[in-house]
Length: 330
View 1 (cartoon, rainbow, N blue to C red):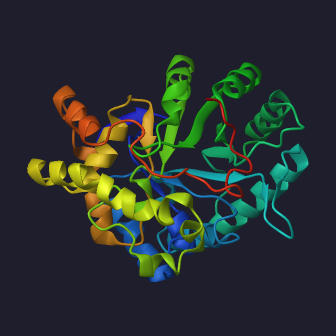
View 2: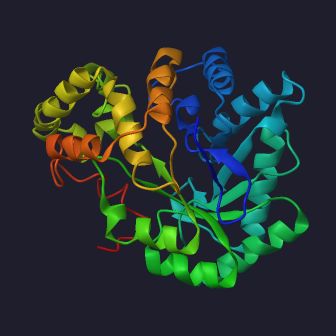
């Protein structure tokens, strides 16, 4: 499996990571045992990057990973582990980027994970009233304390990245990036490459649209996050199922799972781009990992983009509530 570095001069990681939001039930119910099976399979395949957050299931994702690590002494050394904080979920969703708050949340994450440091700690959402340079400085102090090895931000604009990076080196920026969501190409992909920052691409399979088995209407009834998402509401949902048919046909022609093709396309956008799909299923993980092994030619990329040209997706990627926090820059 191809590797890259986490930021400029950072540790080596696979150019494919495992996103752990699914462990917390965000995309339907799961169990510790099913999550363990996914983590075991990812390890056996050689995956080394694991990405979670304190808000996933109010800490449940971190607890599951912590229990898995506890039962496998020495396993922690095989992983580059990332987590996030900064979203205050109750009683009203808001953001807090104060240094003391972030450190307290990090301490909680470390306790749930059962480890003494994380390799990467992101600010999950910016609190606009605090200059991002001050936030980067606060994170830098956590690096000096040894609680984190590197700093990152989620869903920020290229200009914010430059400002933060000027205060303290930023190892990674996490943002949604896939054939269905390409706003990152309006400057973030390029700025990350210029500064030596890893672009961690979440939802690289379009929240299931770019797979051979998209969520059904019945399944969506059990997934509030998607059920309220514009792309999964009618008439957009049916229009998107129709729009991806040429891509699914191309995947069949190439003899590859659609999910593998979607992951491989994301990786093809730069050695610094690291997709982090999530799953509750070991068979689906195998399709995703195939995308970590598949190297596309220029002709393959062109054929994929002809099947799903810019702007094909019906509906916005977030609803009004979900858009609260991510920085728009184009």
